[in-house]
Image (cartoon, rainbow, N blue to C red; front, side):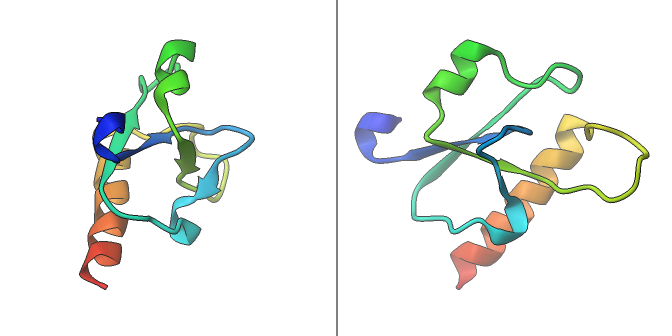
Length: 83
């Protein structure tokens, strides 16, 4: 994927993560999702070019169901791609 110029973005709560609402996508993109409870492991993280996170408000939960998180990310990417 990387050899074809595709950026790999990890969806992860990380020190370097940018809020998905402020993410500036740059073209062909692959998203890597982690485990619902543990997030991504070290090997998965090593493949990522950068990370985005989904900000949550309130103290209800620390992580989202992976399907819900993917839907939010794909929705934001869709709006970016449409211009």
